[in-house]
Image (cartoon, rainbow, N blue to C red; front, side, top):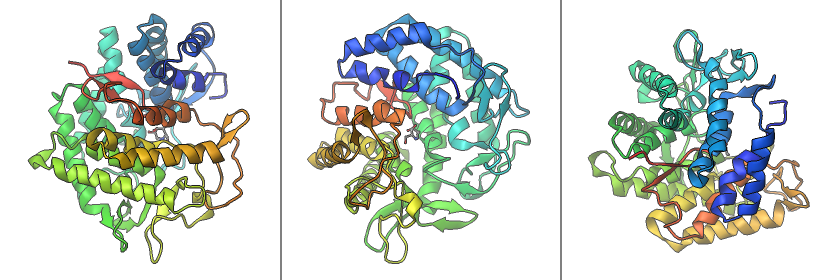
Length: 410
Ligand code: DMJ
């Protein structure tokens, strides 16, 4: 958006709370109470506002019990609802908070909506209906699910693009990284959040990952398991940093998997964690590139200059944390500590932390941006990696895709 929305303050609140930084938390709460105002003439991403703001406010509410967070979350959700006014009910990617006018990006397969965006609303919207008693939010996301369930899927894979006017798939690209990622994550987490009663979500997750394993997951010549990208029937042997969250997802979904393949999925999670660690370890800064290839002689290394950056992303550390919780193998803490030291050494600047433009360069240049997910996710997952398991136990809490913990609805 183009107005002052305090994304960093909102996204970081629950991290402050979990770390016991209660004075800073109260300062954030005061700012939100006095300044966070959604009646602004600003066009925002429905997905980003949902995962960072609504997710952040809901988690702050559940952790602290302070009503102001719930009130603000519900106000903001009301501002997002006009985005669902499309011929199919699949929301627009962007909405103007004042006028309610929505639209999509032209680059997204001729104005399609994006799977990882309209498929990453479920957790927050179910909680909004739970907290308010108003079914409107729940109905919106269940409508999306029902529509997806009815559609044919090429090779059992979900394409990244869906046209909200026609209800038809756009380009047949499938990804477990950018444009697809958190859709799969939210199928699994919908099931977990329902105390494992939402069998429909679990089935959709199981079907989806079976197709992903068949068509997208391969072993490189050097023995590294990777998840590629599917483009019109062709497998691109490239994996994004974003895709690295899937190691944690496979481990989280192991329990309750079809045909009792828990051991298999835990192993797959471990293999993805290993591959992603290699992508860090094969750089000069020991920080992972945005994307890395498995082609020709290349193994887990970025090839193009514009894929060599690290913008403080959390996915690799997120996977270390889940793997730690499920295995207690000390290597995950070791790997997390390596990343911590590298971030501290190469990303710390006087005003906070910055992304770096080339992880293979020994004299890195900064991008001068501290993404709000650094405080919401990267630091939170690191903190949890070095904490005891009784801090936010996974039986009671499910983390949204921005690492905001929401309680299981028993
Ligand atoms: C975060 O905003 C979320 O984790 C999202 O699902 C994917 N990308 C960023 C962090 O890299």
